[in-house]
Length: 87
Image 1: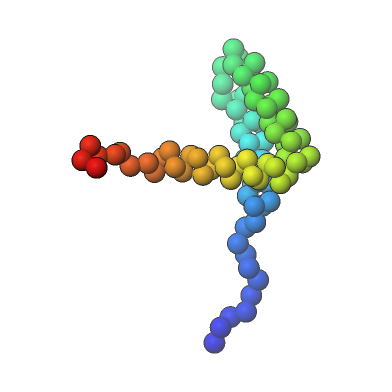
Image 2: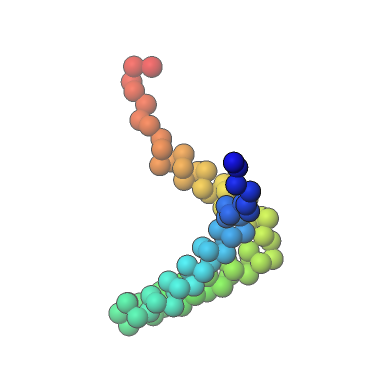
């Protein structure tokens, strides 16, 4: 008997939302773990996070395409096999 249920696979929007949530948590907990001289770093991180969230909200499809392209490029770089000299 085949069980009928809902597809619980996360969508791209769910994944993007999870990444934004994770970045917000990191941005909030990072200052507690860094020395005081790193305050400007956290300010820059907050600014980058705000700009990224704003861009994703204004251009969600473009953000997905950029994320997919970056992911593909990163996958190609990380899985590249060295070429042998005996081609």
